[in-house]
Image (tube, rainbow, N blue to C red; front, side, top):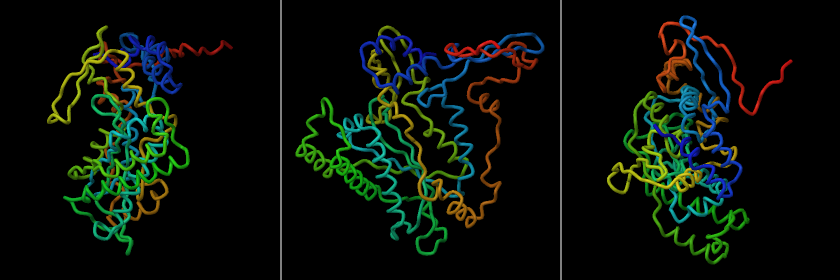
Length: 388
């Protein structure tokens, strides 16, 4: 099956020659190309029974690598088990208008932070409104920057427990199991907050307008864009709530460690380009095929490389780090959550790898009886320890 790594290996060298890429993008390309190859080193195991030799190469562990997200996702989910509450959860998605995409691409760190801030303040403020819940809520926000066709489409997924601590009494207040908040109210407050912070960033000269968007550097042109966006309805939608902790964990796994495209969506790689499947949400969610030349595929993939050190998963309110041992603990006590209520079956990394890849590290892949034992370390190609 073709992979993103194959695309980079086939077309990457030429792309790097013709494009001036930031260091962070070059690092991502090199990491994905090297993932699970001799370049990163590994280890040799031998079967105790039949002597079969098996070589395993190291993963790059880059967060943009399609092959490295399985174990990272399972580890993250395992750490989140203890934060779950025995209540329904909502999935709310906030999307910005396409008119902002070019500004976001050239100001990623600033605009992604503004996006997170506008979303979090919208949910926290409306959650405290007596006519909706009148409580402090908590939620997890996850940034995605892509659409199914790999073009830029910044949006934030929020997973929100149904309920919170009452602003007046401090007691747990249960939300509706069928209804979160009016999406139109969410949309308009989100619009107002994001545009406020966008205007402030412009006033404080924190935004750059190079190349094809240089005209937005003119105050009157920028204001025309702001006016246009104020008069447009923004897209926010809330999916029906889902059930208990197990369903929440499984659902979270679909979003937390996604990358722009998974390897299983890639159908074919040839000199003619890259063919992959995508879902057209504007055409009744139909699955279709798209073919891009190698250069265009790489360009679109690299649109979604995040700034260095940028946190794409954030926790707010009751689920924030500062409240985890205080307010979240209070929620659990009021909901009479026993320490073992939220536990999910503990699994070793061998078990997780077996689920994800079908590879059982304990037994010989040849004879299926003997156990594999470490025989030799393979050092990365750029590193060799000196002999004593």
